[in-house]
Length: 305
Image (cartoon, rainbow, N blue to C red; front, side, top):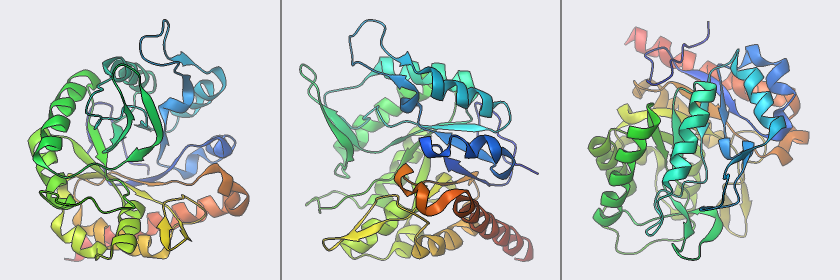
């Protein structure tokens, strides 16, 4: 029986397993709708945005929108936005937030998530880095994000989650470590966490810390959704490339997390569409089955304890 996702709240149903939609999955999500408990959608891939201040901004694209419309009749949807840039010092794009709410209502999405990062800068002449850039974990950033989360939550009418990011360089002289920052942010604002376990694994490898210690320091009751993915080694780094199947250490992190995260409602497998020839439908289904098995084992362990 699939978990019940009710729009506008984080439901108390058991956690389910789904996929992050990408163009390679267009046929998969219709043929195998019964194999997924939810579909995570990047709504930015369903519209054209010519930029702030342009007339008639956010033009829907017919094909992807219609596909998600069809799937959403049978499979619960959650939104994973990429364009808000919530940590930009000089930009807060309220029209973007209002547009998110329109699409959340269109698909009755159970929650909306974004990245705890920034990609846009320059209020007068905007520049977009086209990737999620990390921020220092200090009180100034905490104050900035907290104000914006309050406004976003008031607009969305649904739970709002923030995702931990990847950093390939050390930011010196930070006031707090990442788990402490995330704990403060959730308690202060009421937002939840989308804990990307591959991001955590990537940072642990590249910065030389223990990912399990990170989990011990984090308030796992704030974790609503988890992402699992794979990556690759490149030039001395582990990269967050979302390539192929989930990395084995990420499965071990999920095994450690699942019994200890009482608010967990969704585990989402994500991969870049370029990996589809490597995975195909059978490979995606195998990742879903493995995640579902880990969740089932956690339920059994909780019942026995």
